[in-house]
Length: 271
Image (cartoon, rainbow, N blue to C red):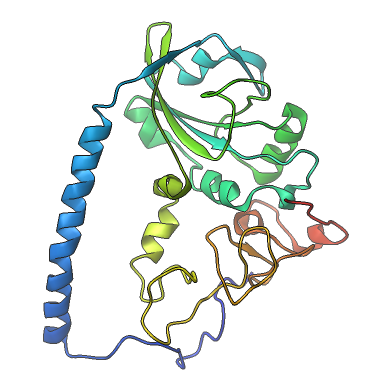
């Protein structure tokens, strides 16, 4: 699979200007002042987040996983804190028809060992029926626990596409934090790394220098329009951004055993 869009030769469009090392260092140090201010503001926001009030909920509400229905309290696995990603679901859709953004997010948490060592458990919740969810989890090769919250009210169930944090005090359970949209990005470390590169994410909304290319050709749920990329990336087997029966959310191509043949005759009905 080729994941490098466009021409990988030295003839790259919109390259940064070439300067000597001293000039680069001066520009880098000027930007560093802003970066440090951004970091300190992020620390201050995190401190305020830790001071938010919390809401008690029923920890006995049943969710369905590989071992059948279990109380939500079990997702803590005996730890005091729990982070969940609430994965969107489209009933009856083929695997490539599930949410691109949620697929990307869940793929980035293959191992929660560091969270666990810190006393934090991790799980993925989704509103899909468990038989469909189980098949998808097996197809993707996910190792983190998944649960169906179909019919369960918010904040455990309800609208999906969120990160939510919970605290346990004995048998009492509390919601402490929730975010969605751009707030979900901390899970996806690839975005932070792309933000450090000269071409960035390659999305149409980015503030890029003149001549800097947009690398993708799709936006969520739509064919290519004006070379608008999206972090809900889909591609064909060769890594080309596309939308249609031969496309999948990008992480699906890197799951164990993926082959281009799997898409033949399969048509996503996402959205």
